[in-house]
Image 1 (cartoon, rainbow, N blue to C red):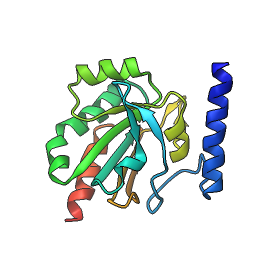
Image 2: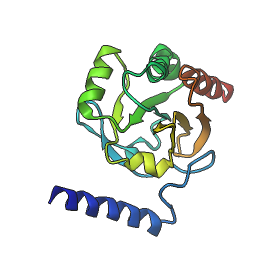
Image 3: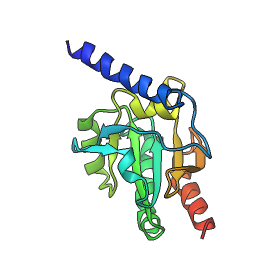
Image 4: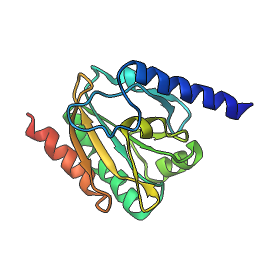
Length: 175
């Protein structure tokens, strides 16, 4: 029964996006608009993309797996530059298909000042069109402006630390 309900919900999301002219699995890039999604963070609190519009710059990064070497570098890179991002008015969220429990542990162990979203159903992953490389989720970072438009995109699978540095460099270049 739960599987049927999940299937119906996912089908409704797909139908809603097709009805709005957005096709799931289209790889989003610069100029595209932030799609609507609502998924839980490491504490089970629902994060809604719609609520982020107009609240400042939004950085969304996708990473393959909690506690893997390169993913940890990527996640900690955003933590290491968090004050600088904050000074620029940027909010940060990380997303992968890991469980809430895995994210909670990873979040606590690394003392992260921003949320990690658990996309077990691949809702945001599919809406952004994030593909897989060598069997694991691609490592991608998006910077969105106040209107929800993607203004910067980085796809770099093997260079986790580069994501925070390049996003910050882009944001600072816009001053």
